[in-house]
Length: 264
Image (cartoon, rainbow, N blue to C red; front, side):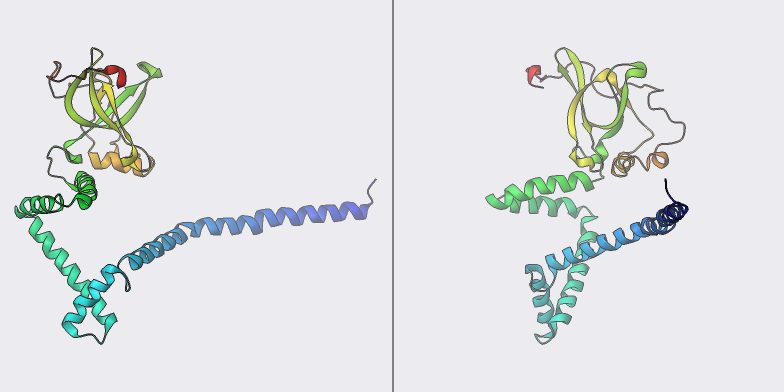
């Protein structure tokens, strides 16, 4: 049997432990969570600055080019001033190039660069896929092969009714394919939080519903934000399964159907 002194000490220790957990640690964690977005933002900005400094700063290949360009104008006595002067000249040059590519000269310059780099075997293997990915993500002209030419659709998987699952995706091609006697379309399923890490699948034509009130950029925002921006992007009260409309394209098999469905 514990003495009154022992019970008093135990109660005191329990009270101190409770105050420590609720007041000290709780307040510390609350302050830490409050500052966490700011701390993470500072870390990310610092990482970007260090990355840029390591890529184009003094002592690098691009940094030396900027320094030489500045030294050509002011002489070789002030490397720091010459470096920033070279940076300024490069930024002005990029701005002027942007003015040029907004005109019809963009296609001429682009075709010339593609033809130039495609002649070098090693450079060609790097430049060709990189240029295609960049143009796919940035081109908004609506030409075949860029994201703006795709459309947002809702794909139904795992059956109809309450058992089915609807997934927002991109209709990669308007072409209608015939696989094992079924009409299917090529659909790109993005992944979160990096939409470009998804995959291409052939989905039954009857399981695809166009989502006309959503743009490609809106869909990418949903995946990048892990669904947090869905209430802002998806119009209130919209139901992509409510009004089913026919997708454009032929309803007959194409001229060159897939002949080996067992490999799909």
